[in-house]
Image 1 (cartoon, rainbow, N blue to C red):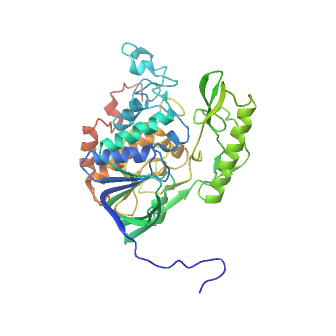
Image 2: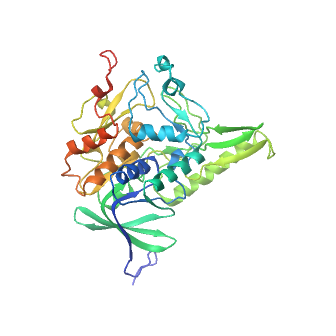
Image 3: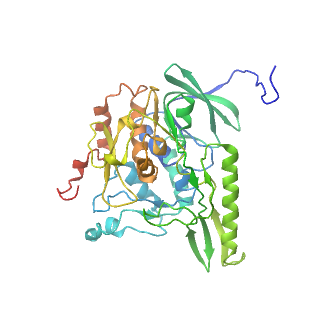
Length: 405
């Protein structure tokens, strides 16, 4: 018996569709980086993605600027997979912001004036990411949503998934939450934090106008620095954690895109609406409150358990060590990567973009390949393996002068 506002779903036996050492949920840059790191350590890895393409906002969302992997003062900060993916994104050419002082021999003198960032083609990058994961032996399940967890006290035993095959279960030793929304953390009972301010509307799109293909950065932009004004195209803000609200956001985005595109003329051979974002341009929603919460005041602070370095994409100067304790909480075999890692205030804004997602993804994937209990992991062994892949862990590893820090 149930009331008029609920429906009782019959219980049923769920078939186990696979068993893996590492299960990663979310195919954005963080999830891709985690999958690469874990697979390269010889683990059987599956990556679950609800869309039919990899890269998340960095490809499907048309936020196609690989923001800086340097500090703006001439020092490269992010290495390892973060640098590898930047090179991959422009391996067949670039669209704009080519960092010649970083990539062209003999131009190193300009690195203090030019940040190590680039604008790439999102559709090409998405396919290249897919090919790279397949080459490394990662199983990719597209069109797949996680709808529940099989838990045993303080551990996750498996995830319940829904796709065209129906409802199934996947079992794993360790799990990576790279959803961007802390979805696995919430299901696992971890303490989470919601970004109550919400997200302003963004509606980036690509158009061909007068024979030239252009990215139209329309609405809120990651390229706007503090003190500058973003182009407001709606007064509404979106939390991004409820299905109807997200649908309304997408509809409003589509309305604004078409209005803006048509304001420059109708459809013709020389004026085409080439690409629109296929996912909502949500930036911050929900994150883990982990064993440590990173904050902006941590700039240049040393963490003994650091698993990588990131810079501030918004301004030149600050460098942050990322502590392993900011990636996990109470659930022993669940770790986060990307924008749902434990970072508060403005640090959340710093950690949500491509380079920090790649850095935390590599750290999470490497850790997940090593253990099914992050609470007892030997961080020194983890750091050794990250160094083997070229990751810089501490600021002194950058060989900066005394006046640089």
